[in-house]
Image (cartoon, rainbow, N blue to C red; front, side):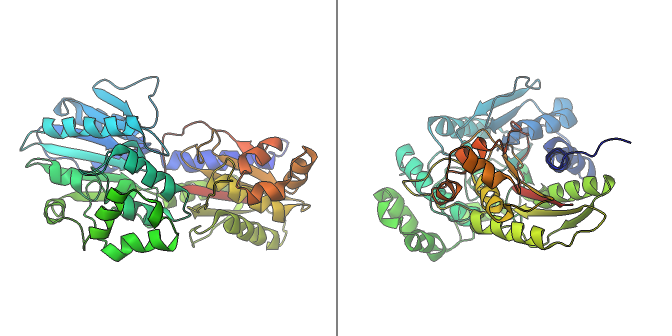
Length: 424
């Protein structure tokens, strides 16, 4: 008889299955096979953390009809498919490389010939990686806005509702800038609900928001007075529903969500079932403060009755962390895991994994963490105060001290976050 698989190894296997289900290559191939592109030349522009894989799959299918492709990505892969140009932007905070990437997109737009087809491939992270400012906003102003937004505690929908007003290619501006071409937009969604205007700040989707939707969250979080004057002036003047040119041009764009967080959750559930577990996928997405979500997940896990068959709970979604000037290092999945570890302390037979599907949680080298009933005490034994670490948003240091961090490296996809938990 084979020895039982350690819970942490089992959870890592389920995480890997979830990521594999949302691989961009497969989602692009399935979409373009089911609904082929029109005959003639095809220009490919890919933006986001999954840009290289998405563009590579599209190039493979398009063959000689695609003279080349541009991918604006988070990393330069060791091997690049023939015909693919990779430009690396900055993430999670845009910088000079992001502005340069936005300029390179402009060159790709010029190269798109009238009468051809343009395939735009969008994945999470595009808002930062291709972040050039609109006219009247400096790169420094844009960088300051992004820093404040990422520390505000606002969810990604609210953040991108604001960012797309100041991004050169946000709110449908990429589609509006393309010549008389047929535009297809395939999206690998990293946000709950799959709103095309939110994912990557909607390069091919018109901006539907009103002025109050933009300025209200900035005022309620208290960051409005700290924003650069040109940014405040532009956002305060924003009327309803985006520019008319973008609304008219994007109306003809064919947009499809080809994969999202549910794809990954289903992949994890199928793998759990194949391994003899009893998986339950939680319908309500993870949202809100990461620490509160972690405590809620742990509470539900502890409440599960024990049976002869290990239970497996699977959540998907995206939480938030409101940072301060005293904040340490970590990401939303790490903070969720640390908060869960606090409630799980001393409980036998429970293990929980929380991780981003892209392999990078916040500005760290970890995808997230795996915690159990002993993690909290291991942090204390290592000489740290996990209570203080949780308060100071310093989850990385605490979890690293306990040997609980999950390091996967970049996964090549990005469909938000997962929490997978076992109860024996």
